Length: 174
Image (cartoon, rainbow, N blue to C red; front, side, top):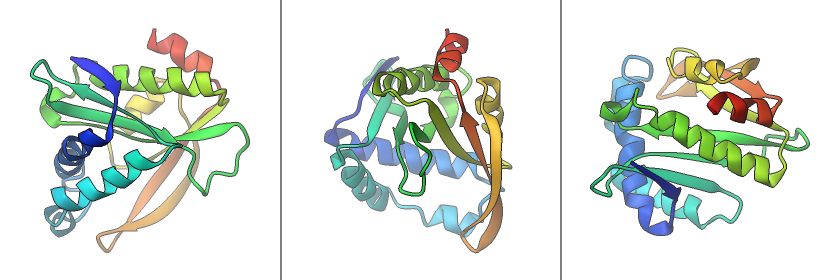
């Protein structure tokens, strides 16, 4: 397994992981008809746009065949007005690669970048019913606030977590 900084050529592979992991991770949480309508083509266009932005940091995880099996990214959302902070905007892995330490490696890569950029605080949003919130909690994220969002016509609880100490997260990641 290799983790590297993403390039524009990775948009299609990232899009596939994005769609496939949403369909497995959010099954039973987000309405099925919404998940069924997710499109590789639409997500590829989104990731071409994202990867063209100078202020977004995206890394991919590849298997031994060079296939993208996961990705993670961070950037400061426009809604984030907290000084010296950024947002961990996603970590997604194909279901068959979960539980192997790849998410931890992606998180570590992001936090090394975040430290290098001098950020002191990091926010991450996660649906309350998404079991990966426990992953963030394990690495020290504390509940900051809870908000309601609507996806596919369904109102869902979204939890906003915050890390206040980048160094402490990196120590725990080892």
